[in-house]
Length: 257
Image (cartoon, rainbow, N blue to C red; front, top):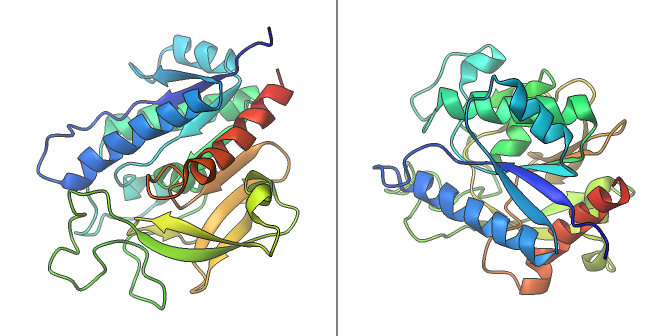
């Protein structure tokens, strides 16, 4: 029997029962990602505990892939800025854990996939910056939309904004969606973010954009590092569409076993 790829996923540390419904939503999306990793015949390995012990680095080195999920905002001081009032769920322990896992993956050349917060975290780790609160544009990136009475708080129901992104031909990101790109390089995605990539970290290239120019995907051409701003784990698409990018990621991890 072929070996089963082991995919490390750092756990979400903030209290899901708190006042901000977005935190609970992040926990539900974490669970959805764990289920999808199992669905594509890989073993999810939750990563937690102290981020500064040597055991974490050794654990990541023994994995076949790492997946960084969504969650609250990174501390803007990590990219040289003071927080604005719209920042939410800034959790130093979560930042420490996620950054330690990402550094260990890069140091061990373990394939790395980042989703939403994970996309932003990888950009910051490479030396990039973020827009702390994206302005209104021709594309709605979160639901409820900016300006609505509930704009500062995601609805308790797992609703999303939906919009198209254009993938770069020949990119690893396009490879994650190859079954859906017969008629072009456009994919409709589930979006739920109020921050976005600003300056792209050195060593990363942009591989997907929204119609308003928002950086929607990044990758490192020198190693298997791919990130996306959207949520492929959202429940609304068909099962085949949800599984597709996770299956392609696990296939890439399996090739390196």
